Structure formats: structure tokens, C-alpha cells
Image (cartoon, rainbow, N blue to C red; front, top):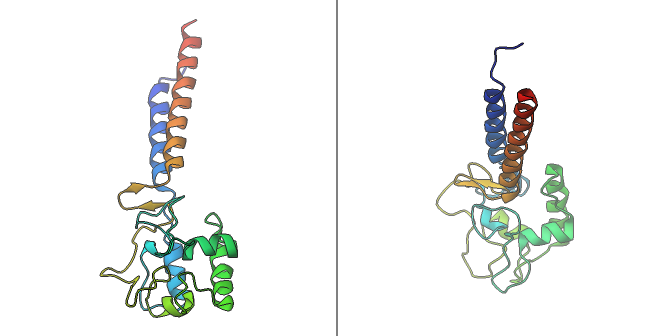
Length: 176
């Protein structure tokens, strides 16, 4: 019979699951790729697509007129899939080819972003570059302040509950 404490193993696994679930969703790809594909003067802020720099699911930013914004257009018109990193390139290429103008100001999104201007705001001088160099953690799912995708937190809690239930069952069987 082993002298190891099985409870310690279960709690270590639970702790590892919590750590992985809370940190595995960071994805700095999208702002970086927009900047590279369109030769932008900066890495844009996450607000080119999202309401805040925390980003996350269901936070796509509309234009100042309330129409679907740049991020929503990439997703719905050009099949951008946040789970498929390779989908960013064809979505951006299609947006550029179609000369889509998300904010209806007469300047296509590509022209605005290639000069650092905001494709969601028709106001002259509305920039996406701001005072920083862009996201450090990424903005699709996770920001520095923690997970913005609640699904990862729910998954971590469910994993923990499952591991505790397994441990209790094993303890009861051993006591019989």
C-alpha cells in the first residue's frame, strides 16, 4: 500500500486546473496581426474591436452611430473565428479588398487603420494608437486584470468540484 496521501494529489491537480483555466486563454495575436497585415504605425488597442481593452466574448464594439463595428464586421461578414487564429488573415484581406467602411465616413477601414485612425469612429483624429504600445497579454479573451471569459472560470470550478467528488468517493470506499 502506498504511503502517499491521495488527498494531496487531488488538491494539487485541482490547483493546477485552476491555474491553467485562468491563464490559458491569453491571445495577443489579433491586434498584432492587424498591425502587421496592414502596416499600421502601432499595435492597436483592443478597442478597435471591443468595448474595453479587456476584450472578451460578447463585447464587440459598435460604431459611434450604433452600427456593427470593425470587429463585428470581421466576424459576421468575413468569418473571423476567435478559436481559429489563421482566420484573421483572410478576414483582413477580404475587408481590404471590399473596401469596407464600418463607420460610414467615406474612408475604408484599411485606409483608416493603416494610418492609426479608428474604423469605428468617423470623428477626425480618432486614433487607435493611444499612448501605449498596445496589449501586452492580448485582448481577445484575457487582459492583465484577469480572465474576461467567464467560461474558463466556470470550467475551473467544475473541475475542482469533480475532483473533490472523486476524492470523497475514494475515501468512502477505503473506509468500508
